[in-house]
Image 1 (cartoon, one colour):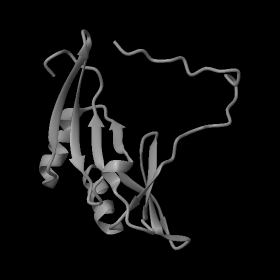
Image 2 (tube, rainbow, N blue to C red; image 1 turned 120 degrees about the vertical axis):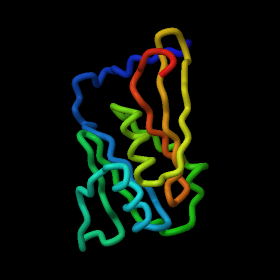
Image 3 (spheres, one colour; image 1 turned 180 degrees about the horizontal axis):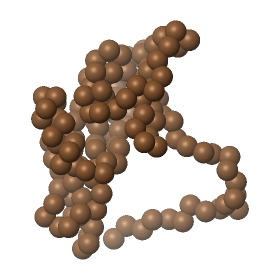
Image 4 (cartoon, rainbow, N blue to C red; image 1 turned 90 degrees about the vertical axis):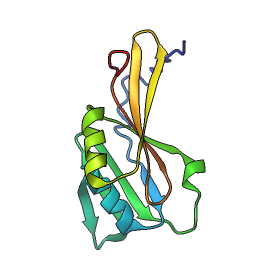
Length: 138
């Protein structure tokens, strides 16, 4: 079974890094915006200062999308994974929005079971919406 490593270091009390704020390079800004809004994320920033950038937020989660300056290959760049509190609610939103998706059941060890909803964004990123640990058989 895999192990989680203690990330504490000599800088244990250092508050230098406060949050992760990734920005995805996308081909079609409007299509990506519509995709994330269908999932229930709200736009937290959009303005004339950065016309090719949109930020989204939900709770403590925040990330941005920006028009790609050059063509990229999203599936080779990363799997974009967000943890969700309710996989069944995500599945309902996907069905309501007509978003194609797959469901993975993962049971890596006794007492560790979770589902992931797998989608593809309009720009081709693989998006995994991972649920919390749940009783085996999800």
